[in-house]
Structure formats: C-alpha cells, structure tokens
Length: 360
Image 1 (cartoon, rainbow, N blue to C red):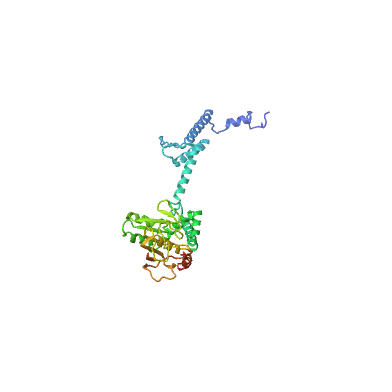
Image 2: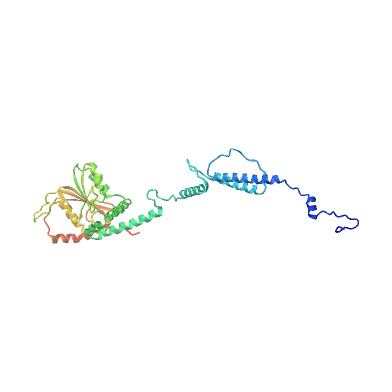
C-alpha cells in the first residue's frame, strides 16, 4: 500500500524531485544561448582592450552613434569601461607632429598643463631683464645705496692713500661707488659735468683739459667729438679713457713749481684747463689744488664744482644753486713755499666738510 493512500485520494508514485522538475513553470533558455553569451563577452573584452591600447591616437569615429543595446550582466560593465576610456581620449591634447601612447600620454599632458598654469601665474611685477620682482629690486637698490654711502663716507673722511689701498684690494669698490653715484645724479636738478661739457664746447680745438677725479670719464666722452683733448685721471684705470692716479698726491703730467723766492709760474706745463667736478675728496684734498697749479700753463684755468653744503665759508663765487657751488680760477705767479708752509695749508682742509648723504 502506497504511503498516504487513503480512500478517496490517489497519490502518484513518481519521486517528488522528478515531479517538481516536470511541473515547474519557469522558462529555461536553451544551452546554445549560454555559449553565445560567453562569446559575446569575449568579443566585447577584445574590443575594450583594443580601445585601451589605442588611447593617445587621435582617431575620428567614422561609425557614427551606436544603437543602444540591452544590458546583460557583465556586458554592462564592459560598456561602462569603454565609455570612460572614450571620454578620457577626448580630453587629451596632443603635441604637434607627434603621438603619445598609453598612460604616458596623460602624465605628459598633465605636466604640460602644469607648466602652462605656472607660466600664466607668473607675477607681472617680475623684471624680465634682471629677473627680480619689484620687492627684490627695491631691496637691492637699498643695499646698493647703503654700500654707496659707506664708501662715500670713507673717501671723504680718510686720506687719499687709504682710498688707493682700498681700491687696490677690491677694485669692485670703484665700480660700486660710481654706480651709486650715477643713481644719485638722477635726483639732482643739474649735473656739474653737463655744465662743463656745455661751457667747454666753445673752447678752441686742441685745447688740453685735465679732468682730475673723472669718475667714468663723462667729460672726455662729451668733449672728444668737439676736437678737444681731455686727459682723465682717477684711482682706477678703465684701459681706455682713464689714467690711474692719486690726484691728491701726484698727477702724472709735466710741470714744475717755483724753485726760489722770486715770482714764477713754473715750467714745462701742457694743460690749458683743469676741471675738478665733485672730486675734492679726502682729508688731503688741498694737495690736488697744488697739483692743478703745477700742471697748468701760465694763465691756465682751474674750474671747481662742489656741493654747496660742504662750504663753511664762501667769500666769492661765480655761480651757484641750491646744490652746487662753481668756482673759476686763473693761474698767477707765486713764490716757492717750504714743506712746513704746505703742511699748514693742508691742515686747513676743514674749510670743506665731508659730503654725507642722509641715512634712510
């Protein structure tokens, strides 16, 4: 007797598992469809790998827009990856005449974009010539100004022999001083050297002029085209215009002083005009005046320009303004003087105060 066999009921004798399989209403795909699905996945993966390998090659999509397909399982993930790869390819920029492949393309492009952004973010205050910003340029000018004032004070408050020693030990001091001097000239209402260029231009051709303390030989450069002969002297030679000399000790030019108590103008002089434009520096500056007398021809001219604030007592002068005092002297005969008399003259150098620039 079958299990659960009761009157009025019949129970099939087939196994329950087989009965359940035979009575299931769920539709099953044929086995052939699963094989087609796997083949489709393999094809899509091949296409994806080809697309990834071609990143960096500018190619136009000639196939046009593709039709939308239903998403099935892993096929959806493959299409998402393909779309992401396509978007990245559109954003890549390529250099002219070349191509970039793979991840190197993105790194190179990012590097170029970064450099472009840096170049665009460069401060407009950068000085293209010197490479300094406005702040750096201002700081450099302050340092240069401080160095100029330091050198200037040494030159005015020490003997000229000390200046010679300093220049020989460090020739850059001469350049730094005159660089700062040119900067100071820009703020002056007038330049005595320009005044003398204008005044001396009317002198006869072949007039011989000695510029004592010439700086960068501006006077010679301005007068040589006028057929005037200018002999320039300063502590450092430039190998062209300037002859190295300590003008407050000895000027290397011919000329003599009186050798007796009789009035004389000396002998063998060749210079018609001596110019001292802001050059009476050092505590022994009166020796420069003595040397100017020695090298001048009889009746020769001595022209001096100095900062007005240096003078403690001025009885007579020819021309002046708020900044400078100009003197014109003419050589006359005199008698000889002893070394003791000259030492007294030199000791009176305090009639000219040192030229000191205000500290900032």
